[in-house]
Image 1 (tube, rainbow, N blue to C red):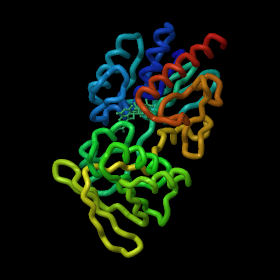
Image 2: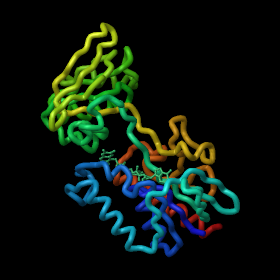
Image 3: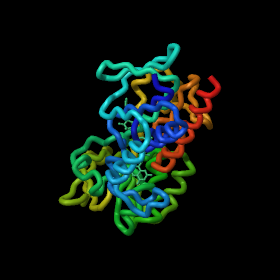
Image 4: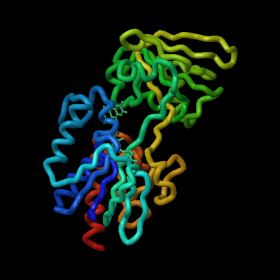
Amino acid sequence: PYDVLVVGGGPAGSSAAIYTARKGIRTGVVAERFGGQVQDTLSIENFISVKKTEGPKMVASLEEHVKDYNIDVMNLQRASRLEKKDMFELELDNGGVLKSKSVILSTGARWRQLGVSGEAEFKNKGVAYCPHCDGPLFEGKDVAVIGGGNSGIEAAIDLAGIVNHVTVLEFGAELKADEVLQERVNSLPNVTVITNAQTTEITGDENVNGLTYIDRATNEEKHIELEGVFVQIGLVPNTEWLGDTVERTRTGEIVVDKHGATNVPGLFAAGDCTDSPYNQIIISMGDGANAALGSFDYLIRN
Ligand code: FAD
């Protein structure tokens, strides 16, 4: 059996595994796709101490660092069930069962997709999901934010300070963001809010050049010219497979304390799959280190 089994091989899982391996305890990593969301990231400019890098490049260095330690990496393996008996038992899609004294969940999250034509095609070519990450790439340009909830309005406020103009498109008749955010966004001269807007297509040639939507009040089709589209309709944690083995929030995020501990003794979690408020590479790595030290503490006491 393992001392620590890490589920997920993104920034959080990689960092957790290196931290536990450095304690000399037996560590395994199960990852559906090593690298996680970083695989899908074009340019990374906010990983402090590295001025600029690319996702796949960062994944390669993560892998190199992990492989420098005695860590069993089981890539392309999906965990489907977790149970705590005398030890934790993790079942994989391939039917295998792994045992471990403690487990760190770091299965990350995925951005909810709009599912309209052009979205997948222009991903990283004008279609973006993370304003903290990609906002500066649109300096001086016109962009849209799709979604009028808290994350959409926060994104619009953030982007308004960088880009030329922001159009917010909300499907419903009203914005759903907190009142103070709505007041703030309405006070900004370079933000236009359109409600009752159903985005139907993201257009472009090499890169995004516009967006088509239906005005649900009049049924009229409209087109806006712009260079960027930020989709802000929610982030979904990859935790469905856990069912009620661990406490999760209403939206499925694993609830953790300051030590990265969940409500189940010996079960820890880190990164985007948890209820920590901000989702970034540097934060996930910090979370992973934190949960690793938490699990080490647990192991020496049990
Ligand atoms: P993830 O990176 O999501 O990794 C999750 C891991 O768990 C993966 O290995 C996955 O395959 C695995 N997994 C999931 N389910 C299972 C399962 N059932 N069994 C086994 N394995 C499983 N952040 C920045 O700081 N800077 C940026 O510039 C930036 N740009 C971004 C651009 C894009 C397009 C996206 C999508 C995100 C970006 N982010 C950026 C956010 C950043 O990538 C995430 O915050 C970070 O990757 C989260 O790390 P994580 O390890 O928690 O999860």
